[in-house]
Length: 421
Image 1 (cartoon, helix red, strand yellow):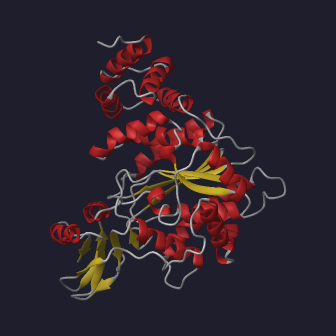
Image 2: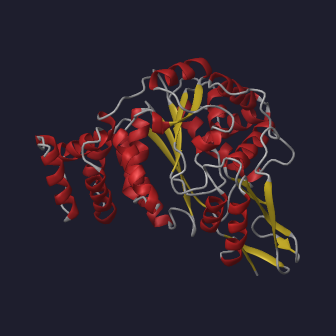
Image 3: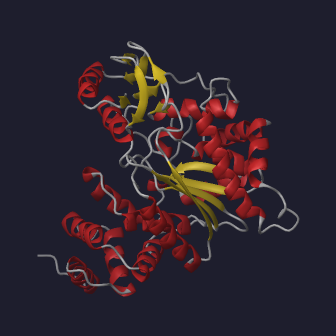
């Protein structure tokens, strides 16, 4: 029988305390994070801790202890000067603003080492989508070199070992597809602190089929996030907005990558709502950065972001980032095609599009094979508030597997994505 070390004993006692709703000290939380990070706690006890946090939540001090312990039990990235970053609380399919924002910020002259996640509860994460055009798996030292070369990068954070306990907790939560608000806050902040960020825009999408459904919850998250940012000397701006539909038209890695490149190309068919959101977020982040730069305090971030995008500087920067990450910089919006098995979902009657269900989109896209099948996904032919006639195409389903497509076609009949009145 394996002898339990003192750290393990402290961790186990701390988990028992949390399960009955008691607060934990930094030393107790550090013991848990250290045991998880070094894979000594085991999946059962790790699950108990994840469940305890989901049920009881954490007070402000515990959130700080958790974030600090997650950072201190893994490696960190090191940069000098202003380091910009962006994160979303997520849950919105087909809204890939990060891959537009990063080249805008880098082209404007700021460092932005963007570490992104793979899909947890959505059809695609930013890392899954970026991987369509370039490799995303790098070591911490390689990332520092990428940023030195191109000013920015878009890489998978899961391979870096930044806040390693968080990555293990994410794996525990993935099968149940749940994350508590506190866990979302800690997960984001730990990764940002570990990646060296000191200027951050946080996107909080709110809506009935989003991860965060009410503005009162968004306000709680914003307050806790601002508290943590202050503790870590990080400047943060919050963007909370009501989301009733996806900003892009494509859902799934290849289709979302196509949306992003169309915006960067300023293609005539680009998704304008996605462009508008990316410019707004980039503008807020630039304002935060300009405020700390003598001589640039009077610049308007949104105007600069729009000029960088419209002039083609953002596209040129994205091609540079793709090249240094080992991808093909000549990539265009029509380079990568979605799955060869296709089905058009048509309106069964005339009417007005009253709602588009983000949760149902996620269910259908995962059946189609997202995110593993990068070519799988859904193209939203029709958007909210539009009028459709009978047999108009509402959305188009794609998959590389005909059996997955058939299952998705049957499923969408019973859980429709569109509500037509």
